[in-house]
Length: 291
Figure 1: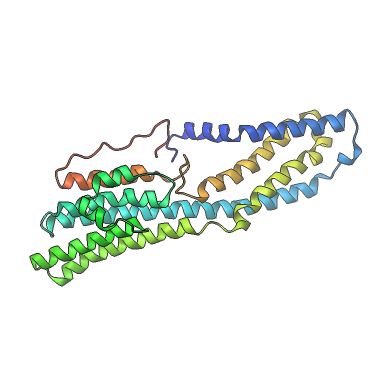
Figure 2: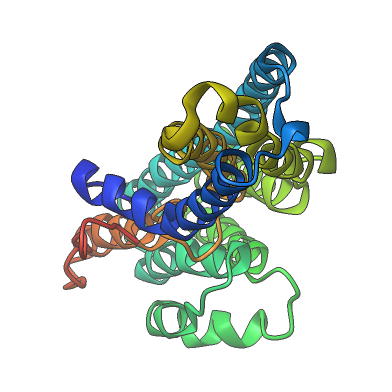
């Protein structure tokens, strides 16, 4: 996730530079054909393209709102995982007699979850934190984060029986695990349900077609400065499309994705400090980007 606005602007410009060069070259070609070779077929009316541009802008606005809603929902669900992880760590220390193995397993859980959601390898963090006996019991599980929650649940039940903890209190701890499972399910739903093709592919096609047709309707008015005006307007549509595409999948390995490693490290630090373990330092932004 980009946390420095100046860096973010430079990233957007750098990622859009190739598109701007292509648009400028096309606009310049249109100007040469119209001004030098007097291609009269290029004298297209400006009103239709203006109306089409307005319609595309509205459509892309709806698409970008949908993409941002997915991104923000993912962040909200990670916030729920953070809060519930802290609650479970606290109750493991205050109610369950200081079960350090459950706290360590809970610290490993967000790392296993970010690995399951994105195209990243967090096995080193999981192996470092997850108790060996639990790692052996969930070996071969297709859904490793769910396996960790299952093992934590078994540990909670075991300790509740051993200490004679009241059923209502046991149920309160189990509800935390249920909330974690619900948040994980929400994250998996976002990952497994991409935006419909009408939202993900059509805006890109429309933006490209619009950028091709735009100079044909502006060259008779702008003349030799068509590459300046037409390219900037076309770039606006391309950037709008790119913004939606960047937010569409919040879990990929990208500077625009959620900082899952940083959030997992935050949970790890909070939990390990509660059992007097020395955690790794929090992640700091590198080059204006927090991973």
